Amino acid sequence: MFLEEKFGLTGKTAIVTGGGSGIGQQAAVDLAKAGAKIAIFSRSGAEETVKMIQDNGGEAVSIIADVREESAVKEAVDQVVQRFGSVDILFNNAGICEHKSALEADAKDFRNIIETNLVGVYIVARTVAAAMIRLGIRGSIINVGSISGKIINIPQEQTSYNASKAAVIHMTKSLAIEWAKYGIRVNSISPGYIKTPMGDVPKEMEEAWMPMIPIHRWGKTEELTGMIIYLAGPSASLTTGQDFVIDGGYTCL
Ligand SMILES: NC(=O)c1ccc[n+]([C@@H]2O[C@H](COP(=O)([O-])OP(=O)(O)OC[C@H]3O[C@@H](n4cnc5c(N)ncnc54)[C@H](O)[C@@H]3O)[C@@H](O)[C@H]2O)c1
Image 1 (cartoon, rainbow, N blue to C red):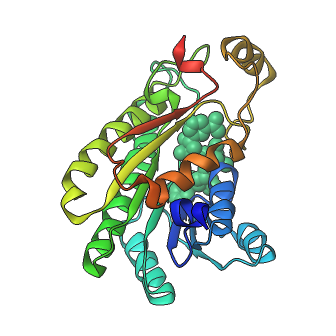
Image 2: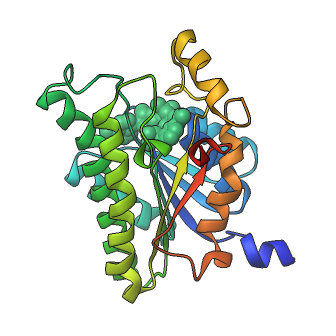
């Protein structure tokens, strides 16, 4: 009862972008366990995630939408509102990473990362916020930053990715201020190294990282769940414009 009142999401609708794998898949499954109906936006369908949610007794739909395509995102958000009658939570997670130094990555490579990780996050956030405002919903938007938006990772060189994530963290603050007057909260989470398809890196890189992480291990996707559910729900009603680092202490050093 107390936990449901403070953290429950029963009756809410959540959109999760990039929910076919990794952090997005875990967030979709766990937001559903907390009571939310889930719409997953992905480029090629997220049937596996939908099945995982349905197997737990939850409600979910997979919608094809590339976050870089404004019209596809608008159509997808309209579909969610038509189907579920609301949109209360956005887990704005879709992203890509490329380990290329600034001398290797030309402007096309740089734009490619920015287009998904920054422009895509912007497109989905503003489309969902517009729907929330239209429906009078005081919703919660959670963008996915990274420790790479706070510090410079080594040994891999990845200026494009680092710049995109730093921009997501600052954009989060800016959107939080613009939309506070509508009761929409905007926060970000910044995970450290989490074992997902994106975290599937060469052995040498993993061996270089582990001594640098104070807890000396990969993070698990489920170790992000508590923060996501907190930010999505009623307990976070005073929390907006903040970034939450979940990294086993990596950025302390
Ligand atoms: N894994 C980590 O160590 C780590 C650390 C910090 C931040 N992150 C961030 O977490 C988020 C999720 O990454 P992950 O580790 O789960 O990796 P992942 O590759 O499993 O997940 C990324 C998802 O985004 C989807 N996606 C990519 N481009 C898209 C587009 N244009 N439109 C729609 N969907 C698109 C992919 O298909 C994939 O399902 C990313 O934003 C990533 O930058 C990951």
